[in-house]
Length: 166
Image 1: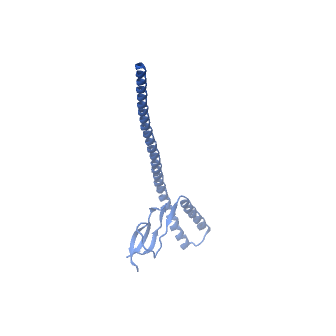
Image 2: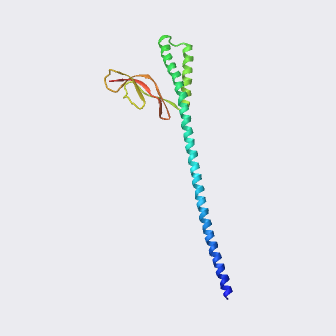
Image 3: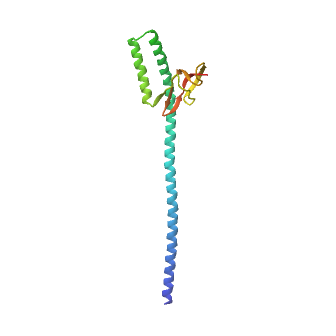
C-alpha cells in the first residue's frame, strides 16, 4: 500500500511537472508566434511605405520631364499667335497646329491638366504667380495671362503667370 501511494505520488508529480512544462512550452510558443506576427505586420507596412516612396520619386521624375515639355508647348503657343497674325491660314500652319495638338494630347494622357486662369477672375496665389501689377478697376483681378500653368493630380507643377490689377 505504501508502495502504491508512492507510485501514485510520483505519477501525480510527473503529471504536474508535465503540465507545467506544457504550459511553459505553450507560453513560449505564444510568445514566438506573437513576435512572428508583429514582424510580418512590420514587413507589410514597410513594403507599403516603400511602394509609396517609390511612387513619389516616380511622380517627381515625371514632373521634371513634363516641365521641359511644357516649355515646348509654350513655344508652340507663341508661334501659333505669330502665324495667325502674320501669315493667316497656310498648310504649314495646319501641320504646326497638329504637332501642338499631339503634344497637348500627350501631356493630357500623362495626367497633366491646364490650370484655367482667365482675365476678370480673382487672383488665386495657390495656382497663380504675379509677374506684373497693372492699373485696373478691381484690386486683385487678373488682367492678362502671361504663361499658362499646369498641374498633375491636383498638384501645381507650374503656376500660371498673370498680370494683376492693383
